[in-house]
Length: 345
Image (spheres, rainbow, N blue to C red):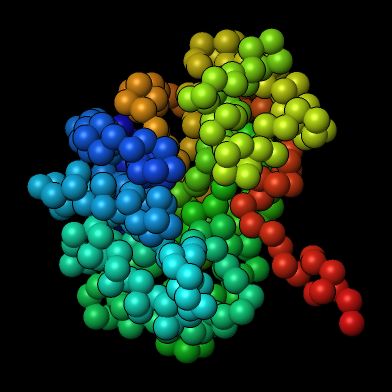
């Protein structure tokens, strides 16, 4: 397992970060199996664990707490706030009111007295960034969080947050967690260079692009078994991710065939090639792996030391140009400044 410094914090973290989104009702309801996966990841050298309050409505944080009951100090523990956690008008978002309330809930669910990295799960237009940074700075000074970061923020908002923090004497975002994969490369345009300039650590989510880069979805072998993601997300209203009537999905199917050839040329699996691709960018610290089953974790861990030759990286660039996005829906959030209401008087 390789370790890198998380931005300019001085913290050393594993290049593979264990993501816990699949722990609980969203994925694996077998708590014992999830706990074993956490232990196996730690035993393999992973020291970075990421979850969020919204994952399975808090179940994920509780499962992580169970797994880390005797091993809390072995990991850099990260969680997130923003998503809706209840029916109330203020049980979501980036306001001081909600952050101050929800951090206590996360601390309780995680069974810890502090969170190492507390992240704002998504940007939102309704809350001024100084409100959010002010609340996070107060939590840091109170010792309830060690560092804080953002997730899926555009580059201009990272710059704005850094400027506001300096102007107001507040602590700043030390990390960003964006989507990044062979199919989702828009962060190369601005987010990654901005993060590098600001000295931010970057932990990327969905390096396998919702399972597309595992090779499980091919024209001649499209996995629609009940256990496959293509079947499971349909019940959650996200069937568009694998809807073959969409042109973007057809392009993904074409690209997967070409990527399979590249992986064979490199002598690696497509899954390992996809993870290694994200770690090749100098602005990336860690790639979040989110296994649902133990065998998936074992496979991901077996490729932890794989790095790609420049010729393979160049060939990937030929297939999917740097800075581009195969499917706009994979951006991770909807830019509200492009909606009609923001563009018209």
